[in-house]
Amino acid sequence: MNAAQIIRLALFNADAVNEDNTTDPLFTQAELLAWASDATWEAEAELRRAKEDYGLLLLQSGDATFRWAGFTYDPSSLELTSADTRYELPPDLLTLKSIRCITTGYNDIKFREVDLSSEEFKAGQSYGFEGGTSDGELLYAVVGENTLMLAYPPSTTLAIEITYIARTAPLQIYTTGTITTVTDSASVSGGSTAWVVNEVRNNVELIVSADATAPKIVSQTTGGTWVDPSAKYYPVQSIDSAGGLTLSGAWLLAGVVGYGYMLATRPALPHDHHMQIVDSLVARIKLKAENKGSDAYLKLSDLGKKKMISDVTERQLDTRRTVEDYVAG
Image (cartoon, rainbow, N blue to C red; front, side, top):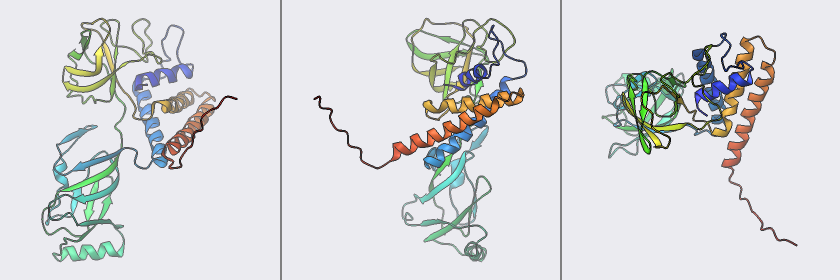
């Protein structure tokens, strides 16, 4: 499910959808989307407890500049020099796992994480303040959310590679403009869509309306196209320009011109655990409506977390399984 389907299903499960498909004015789409993002991050945190390398990324100091949730990051800022001991880490960094030197001739340099307040790190800083450098071992600590601090610098400029656990960006729902599709083509063109400047990301699905108005999740107006929690929507392979995107597969329906649309994030969690986000969202909806049923859905969400941990752990077991042939008799 994508974010729009998750929110719509949560509204149904919380009895916040009327017979004419309209919704209670107590809830806004922006609020529900923020709650869904929170629930997704909570679920991902549980997943990381069972699978420590979930969300692992590799980044080198020579890689291209990228954008993440409104932040521009140039990996060249990771290049270590003999004149500096503080470096900016990626904005999506959650946990730094390792650092490796990739400059030829210096590949044997070891990086060792040491607590910033330890006597060893302080002694290293004193050594660095006196002009000391090293080509053997570099002590480091992560300060705050995304600052790498070395106790002392290397003797020369070094390119490095880091591996880190990345946080996911907030969920998105975007509906500005209209789109045009062509049967048997994966290319979709947009009118007044401004996808690039509004930083619409690639892990989204396309929901197309039946007219020029955008599909609806939360509204007090009847009619129009409502997001269907049970439908299959087209995943987007890439956002190519302000008014162009490519679907993961060809558009197989009749082509449309100037129709309303919605792009909604597809959470990175395994699909069979999206209901955990739904249950958490239902609990928040009921809590705001002062409905005591919120406790039951909080328990369902907790059960979902336990099931996810069990599933992930089972998939990682090294124990060999033996399956015996069935012999009728």
